[in-house]
Amino acid sequence: MKTLGTLAPLTTQLVEIQHLTSAASLLSWDQETYMPAGGGHARAEQIATLQTLAHDRFVSSDIERVLSQWVDPSIGEAIDSRGDGWDESARALLREVWRDFSRAKKLPSDFVKRLSRESSLAQQVWSEARKKSDFRMFLPHLKTIVALKQEEAEYLGYRDTPYNALLDTYEPRATVAQLRPVFAALKARLVPLLNRVMTSSIKIDDAILFLHYDTTRQMEFGRLVLTAMGYDFERGRLDLSAHPFTTSFHPTDVRVTTRAYERELPACLFSCIHEGGHGLYDQGLDPARYGTPLGEALSLGIHESQSRLWENSVGRSRPFWRCFYPLLQQMFPEQLGTVDQDRFYAAINRAKPSLIRVEADELTYNLHIMMRFEIEQGMIEGRTRVEDLPAIWNDKVNSYLGIVPPTDADGVLQDVHWSLGAFGYFPTYTLGNLYAAQLYDQVQKEIQNLDAEIEAGRLTVLTKWLNQKIHRWGRMFTAEHLMQRVTGRPLSPEPFLEYLEKKYGELYELS
Image (cartoon, rainbow, N blue to C red; front, top):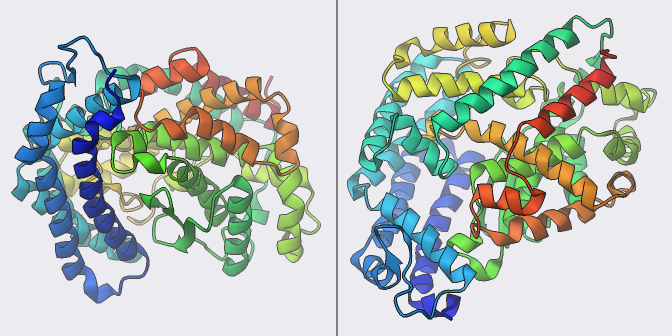
């Protein structure tokens, strides 16, 4: 039986390549947190150089020669020519490395450098354009990025639509044809549920969330919750950025960011919990497998399942706030000292159409994703002119949510993803919600006193379950196989829809 040890000539090179990628990621993290504004152009060149070096090393003849000994390129699976076989881990590693190699090999080195450079520059311009709410400032960069992503899709090849090539980057093996019926099923039940909520006689006042809240104390409370979740500050840190994100250079160095506004308590609070879910996943990966697919997150949808599970299934639940609300009241006695827990719980779960995706409630969040999914498909397929994006965006928001953004900052400029070239990323947020609901349904069956543990502040009982079931496996399994393995059934929107109907049915006293 051949094992991971057999693959040492390959894994040694993969780790060295990952060192280059991690260095580029560190420069990107600094760019979004502490880099002086004047360093933008030099930083773009630095990141582009490192990412190009990593790409060239990965698609080199050395890697191809080593892989060709063990992988049948016609099927992308390990060769069993002598009948001695491969163990499951070695077989999975070869499958995933071949998948990455065969995709990367299609991308010319010059293209990789151009895309990296332009994405780094575009991200910096996006940040300024958002502050000034000026789409025209960002427009030339976005047009360049869209053209590059269309070029990338052609290099990679695709069936049906070029968008599939980009979607496959973030959610391997997913297609538009698979997503459309899922989104349709969600929309068919979410829109009527939202209409019932909006016409309910129950009116929830969330004004208490928008009083003056000291941002330093908000960050302090965020650190407190992250620590309770099991996020290890000896292997991570919390910082501020324009758009909350998590980045990992190694399981021993995983960093999360948040944003804090003086008159908007939920922004910092829930982005800390959300990014903490991502951070726990990355800290929970096996350090011994660093640099290989077995030391990487399975997919963006599965990654998002961890953040949404913590943010919503836990962070917006009654058991969580029975523990943490008294602590929040102590942190902000003037604002919350006389506000009872039920009122606070209702406020943080209020459903109402809103402009900003990351601040949307659980009921309307996926409508934000659906409209982005439609818009970016149109751009990649050449049906949507980038110049027309603000008007198209506003029309979509009005169609889905019945409101119109007053500014570009509240509309088309609110997300960082397109500046980074992350087309095909948005659908993973909805997949993450579905994965999260199904996983949380399962964990409640397996840990029967879970609510009591959470109410007591013992959140790491959940962290340990997720680590055993999800984190430590890396890309050992496909997402479909993992969900079947952990929950005993394929992915379904039903647990998520049942969760929302029960929660909002109780909150708004729907019959």
